[in-house]
Amino acid sequence: MILVVSILVGSGIWYLKAQNYKERVRLEGTILNLQEKISLLESKLKYEEDKNKISYAENIRDFDFYDYFYKFKKDFLINIKGFKPEIEYGDYNQDSKEEALVIIKSAMAPIDEYWIYGISEGFPISYLHRDKVDSVNGYNSVKYENGYIIDTVGVYFESDPPCCPKYFKHTYFKWDNTSNNFIKDHDNLEEIKYP
Image (cartoon, rainbow, N blue to C red; front, side, top):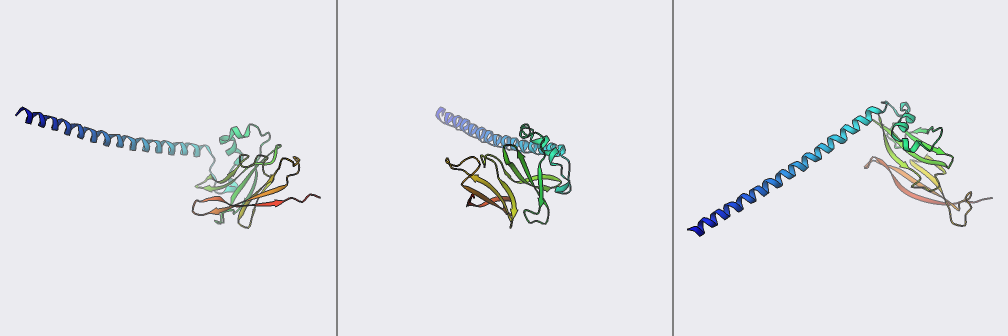
């Protein structure tokens, strides 16, 4: 009889421990789910706060890029005196709305960085950004042609003088409706012919 009682008590304790474990796992899952929701809400609030710091614009030509860069890219502007972005407007993604090609120049390179910006719900959205990480010496040019954003950099070999690279590398970016962004399509090397 004592053995039966011991088995029943042991089984009951094991059952309670299993139920406690299941409940603990369920509660931990609920806590993780709530933490994810809180994190998502915090990021949405931060986004809304950031949006409120930027001036609203109906179209890209009304947007103040100087103000935007000053508020959100101060570290970038520290080394550029007399900063003023060069902006070219066009329908780069062929959606019947204008986008802005924002070019940043400095004394160190013809073009340090560039962005393609559109407007979404009155605020800027970046579709493409290229900086000196992508090109050590900066970009020689960037343009829109035949549905492509094309940037050009000099390709230097050890024997090339700083003025005269052996090749130009043209990188072509095309609009991709699936990702709603510009993606790299291909590169093209062009040998430079000097007089």
